[in-house]
Image (cartoon, rainbow, N blue to C red):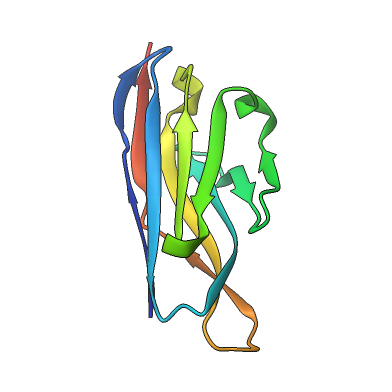
Length: 121
């Protein structure tokens, strides 16, 4: 139906940078908000950043000024540039998209399988 595939995770030292990308494919009419969430061991999944189709971004407080979300609406992609990474950013990062599957229909939430980000101290 719809697949979200993340890429770009990995291991980086404190202060380093990573760039996560997510591409949505399948039976897509349009996509509303796209975003990134993360989940560290023992913690609930939390919002990192979201971006509307018209460019309004929202960030979790701890990543403001360090992370930047962007999207390519034509290619159904969303990217998260992460700079000045800290050990507390270590988590599995998940891509999320609100997808319209048929004209006039409502949006459905889809998730990627996640990509691991590990920041060493």
